[in-house]
Image (cartoon, rainbow, N blue to C red; front, top):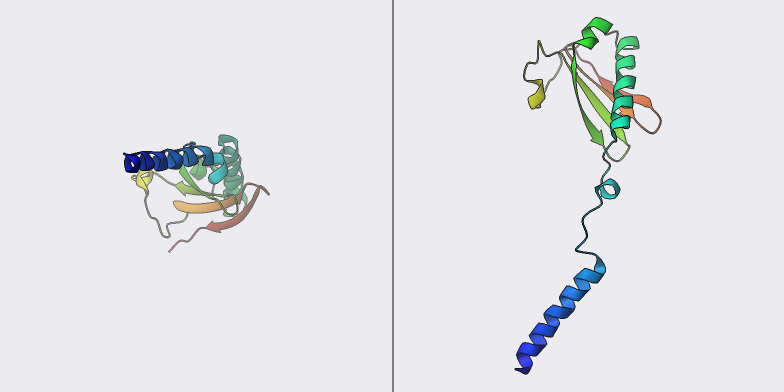
Length: 125
């Protein structure tokens, strides 16, 4: 009887410790991981489009028919915007791995803190 009581008390203290230490809380994803806001994504796309026209010399008409996907890089608060021409990449929504193909595929990386382009990939090969 004493043994069963000690085991029950041990489980009680373990459960109490877990509750007090916060292990039962839902994770705060905004704090643990950086998830860009809709406003940050729209701003990054705007900066990337302007860069594509002015620096990569993509025509406005070409750019208007392109589809985009993005992925964030948490450490530097960078949003990578990938541009796909759906005529050449009809399966673009399923995570197409594209190498080369510019101007039908290219990527522009935007730092959302400084609102500047930090890198791009635009290879014809």
